[in-house]
Length: 208
Ligand code: ITT
Image (cartoon, helix red, strand yellow):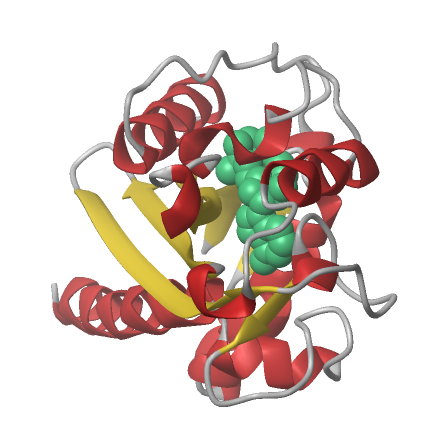
């Protein structure tokens, strides 16, 4: 079975593959051929003009399914900071501007939280996955709560990882071993639900 990940973010591609390997049994995982947009270089940029993670994820998955004819999964994700009324949220990738780097986005977030004490720096990382195969459209969500610390720590991961300490841990996402982030993250929780769906979906398809 071929699945196209509707993302241009290499870090997401890597994490999604690693997490699916955790949640799918080896036999099922080996039946999947996981592709991404880099396998289809002619696919144009997809504008994210939705008002929610779910709208954006569905749009990305639908466009990629229509253009490739294959099953598609899209991931729309970001961090919601309570003190900033949920910002950057769906604008996480472009918080400091259209082509902003992770460094610039992190700088902006720290600037806006300057002087805010740790107990008020609560945040939620959210991931919404959309699966589209032409007959079925499904949404899977995952969220992980934590805090935004005062300065970046750690070299792993991407995006806001160096600033986020999940509840119950001392390390940032960027300081953790990859497989720990992949077991507790917002993306992991959404993909665990997707893996359950896929297992049931394939069992049903194999019966007929
Ligand atoms: P695609 O749309 O091509 O998938 P993107 O990076 O633009 O790539 P989003 O629009 O979903 O994806 O924006 C997600 C942003 O949220 C991402 O660029 C990071 O800044 C942040 N983010 C999401 N998940 C993250 C994670 O696990 N760790 C750190 N930052 C994350």
